[in-house]
Image (cartoon, rainbow, N blue to C red; front, side):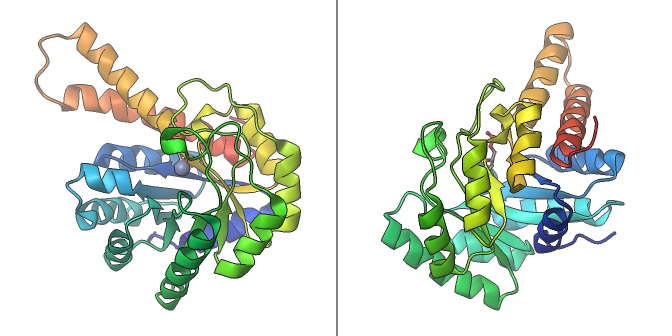
Length: 281
Ligand code: G3H
Ligand code: ZN
């Protein structure tokens, strides 16, 4: 099945009252594991590549997008490609040229007025390319001050921001925090409901690795549609590598430890896909 547009996956999830999981891709093994998990569960998935991941790959967006696109094209379930947390406009344009169907333009560190102006300009350009745009209002605590536990998005401001920018989806601050390694975050479910009622576009949850299963289910029930997950897979990957190296100090061939690492990511992604989709694991 060829890769599909993120817009389609998000619209379908929203219509059915489910969430769609979007996992961060760093290595080829991430893309393979996430896609294998989607195939195993029979659920669609978003492969998302962050600006930080592009920087890790030498600042070149094309090779990593091309690799993820090739994995997506070979999948038996719908898989879309998304650029995540992009602040660099040049990188955003290069990612679109490389073939992503959607972008998250992150101007959340700017003042409200500057965020609106920059996001509106990028959204207008992206829509001209047929590309779906997610943006963020305020910061969602955690790393770099974005997406922090105490930060909250105001529903009235979110509605005004969405109208002023024309974005297709909005990342909101409701209690989650990026890069948590323990699943102890509590979300403001009542606020999610108010944001869903106030904002005409689908809501996006960032920093979902720190959110317990049951809270993720309830967040989707309250109105979250796209659920972004990164750290959970890296915990699985690194744990498996660490375990293998501890047991086999003489190993040289990276396939010996990347295979269990990829398998561990597949297990973690399959579980989270079912949780976000509201299915039993
Ligand atoms: O945009 C990516 C996500 O917000 C990932 O956050 O690594 O805390 O799951 P996480
Ligand atoms: Zn994020």
